[in-house]
Image 1 (cartoon, helix red, strand yellow):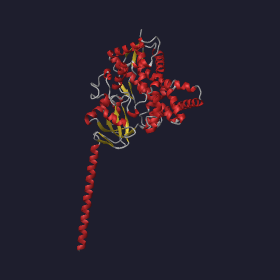
Image 2 (cartoon, helix red, strand yellow):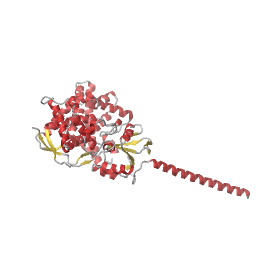
Image 3 (cartoon, helix red, strand yellow):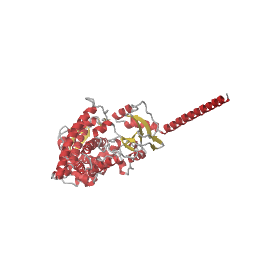
Length: 484
């Protein structure tokens, strides 16, 4: 009996001890979970997968991402907040310090993260997607042409001739045209003919535009879908580029005069093919990066030019100052003489106008990264695998960085702009490789238009939309007449 009593007491003791352990474990787990949960930034995740994607898409389509999506959440939650976009848990960060932290930690804490459709259509081996050493090697080859002063100087006369030929062909004798469409045709031709040494054939621009239409569409290949049409167009482009690349490789390996010809007429493509011959990069890397650079160099530049003209039309005093700068440049030139690199350096006010236009109308609103480890930032934890979205609006439209940020004031760029504040083409290791090319394109085009034509907007209040990149909803129709 005593033995049974001892066993019963022991059993009760162990049961109580076990219950205490379970209660302690559950309480600790709950406390730990709550603690971790508290570390997540504030915000709303909403329902699985969809989250706040619909609100994001609606604001994007109306070109009101800042006003209708980012600003209300910044007001409610602060500069860093969580949401769910495109099926992914996402943390949106705003401000120069956040931009510096996440963009400079590329390959260390975060990696580029684009939708599957974007990766498939732009190419898995483009610098948009590559990581680490592969990215550095590819970027080095591209930057040799697009960032090196000697390479850019060699482009100036070619771009001047392209712009003047375009104006002679499409503007002369017309009284009205679509400025945005005109700049898309021009920038597309400049990329192909000046950088790649490839003659633009009828229908090529339209084929590339079909690819762009599917970049943010669901990656579902059913007949007639946006993605399916884009994939088909991409296949056609790839076949054309493979043929051209193999022909160039054959000429360069044969040591023909064509080597020098391609070096002069298609500097960028010859650099990439030379890298392929040395074994530094593959044929697929050449093709994927050419496709990406065509989009990067002409779509964003076209929009930047269009917005520059939109704001010049709305602010005639600024236009007068800009025109005076170009008249001064013309005074020092003979009739028919094209611009030189020294002339481009004199366009300081014009570049201020262009930068202020890109501040107010950034060609890209930001981009997504993915956390490759748990990230501690600003008192919060961003879990491994979550997306991080930085935005240009977080600094461009912020009073902390730009006084009266919604007003147009080119003079603000007379002063030094701190790093990671002005980001129309991104920042860090993935800053747009064609940024200097875009600058040349904008300045040369503005020069020849304002010195050869008078112009005015036909739709002054035209809205800007996005699909998937921003563009004037009516193509920015303008009335033109040649200067007397």
